Length: 140
Image 1 (cartoon, rainbow, N blue to C red):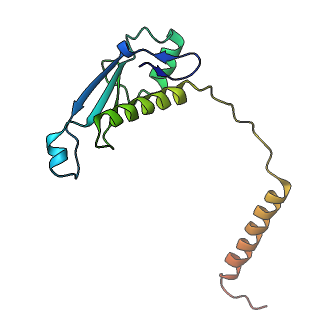
Image 2: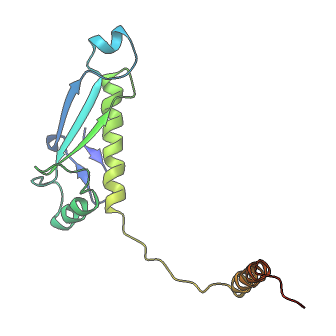
Image 3: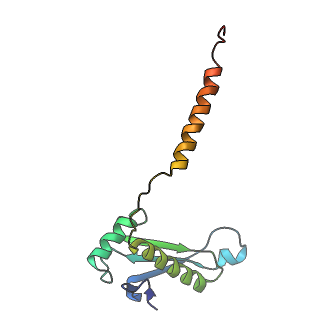
């Protein structure tokens, strides 16, 4: 079943590679006998399911998560079920892609409120007085 990311991008099954392995952590005999951990790999560098601008944006935004060969790896091992972990990995991949492809909203700079400036200067004045009073006593 393809992964729907947003209106412009759907990842086909052919682009996904699933591998199962034994999960770590506590769990006793179940963990030791079943391969419930799922690793999902997607080849971003050579995948035909993304446009060139989407590929560039994904490679730039997810550069710390992408291996040298251009594949992105997502691991899920929270559930005892391989099927549930597979769905969790797909969901996590969709969220990663959606966040990376979301347009950045530029920050609108605002002025510092007049009251904030006055408070800051007032605090500085009071602190200055405290420090001045710490000095040597005068004969006044």
